[in-house]
Image 1: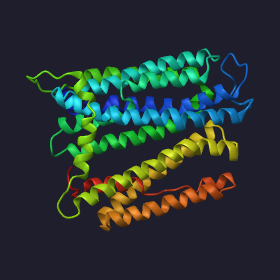
Image 2: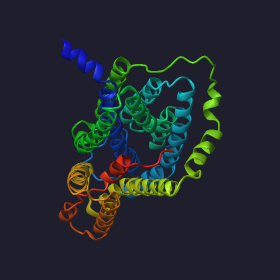
Image 3: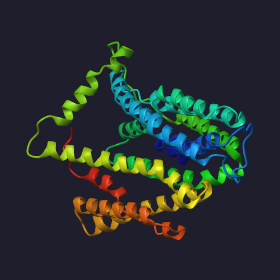
Image 4: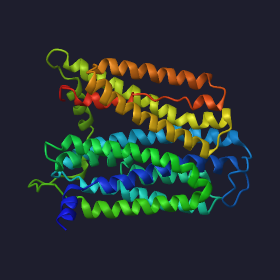
Length: 373
C-alpha cells in the first residue's frame, strides 16, 4: 500500500504523456495514408482494399504534398505562436499548467472522433478531413503546446535533484512512442483498417485525458490582480522574446545563443523535410506500401536511439569528446545518409541505414553551461 502511494506521488504527467504521444504519432502516420487513398481513388464509397493499386497515384501524391507544404506548415507556425502566447498567459494567471495540457488532449479526442467518421463515410473528400485537423488543433496549440507544458510541469513539480532525470525520462518516452507508432501504423491499417485504427487512437486519447485529470496536480498560485485573456495575445510578447535573445552580453555569449538557435532550426528543418517527402519517394521509386515503410522507419528510429546512447555514454562520458566534435560527426553522418538515399537503387541498400548520433547533440548541448536568456 505504501509503495502504491509512493508511485502515485512520483508519477504525474508521464502516463498521459505516453498515451497522448502514442495516439498522436499513430494518427499522424495514418493520416498520411488516408489523404493519399482518398485522393487517388475515384468513385469509391467504402474503405478500399489497400492491396489494390490506386486509380491515380500521382493525384494522391500531389494532394499530400500540398497538405504538407501549405496546410501543415501554416499549422506549425500557428502552434509556435500559440506556444509563446499560452506560456505567457499561463505565467500571468499564476502558473496554471494543467489546463494547457488537457486542452490539446481534448482537441486530439475530437479530431480522432471526426476521423472515424471520415473513414466510415469514405465518400467525404480528403480536404474536409484536412480542415477538421486544422480546426481542432489550432485552437488548442496542438502537440507543440502539449509537449511544452508537460516539460514545464515536470520541471516545476520536481526537486532540483531529480528535475533533469524526470525531464530526460519524458524525452525518452517520446522517442519510444514514436518507434512503437511507426512500427504499428502500417500493420494496423492493413489488419484493422482506417476506421478501427482511428478508434484505437480515440481510446488512447480518452485514457490520456483520464490519467491527466487524475494524476496531474494543479501547482498554480493564487494571484491578486485580474488577468485578461487579451493580454496573452499581445504582439509585444514576441518582440520582447527577440529582444532577450539578441541583447548584448558579456564576451561571446550572444553569439553562442544565436549559433545554437541556427543549429536547432536547421536540424529540425532537415528532419521535417525528410519526414515529409521520404514516404512519397519510397512509394514512387521502390513501390513500397505502408507496411514496408513502417518497418523501415522503426529500424531507422531504433538506430537513432542506439546512436544517441553511443554518443552520450561512449563519446561524451567515457572519452570526454567535445560537443563541437560530436556535432560535426553527426552532421557528416546525416549528410552521408542523405546522399545514400539519392543513389540507392535497390531495396536492400536502404537497410544499411544510419545508426548515427545526431540526436545526442542537442541533449549534450543542454548539459553544458550555456548562458541563460
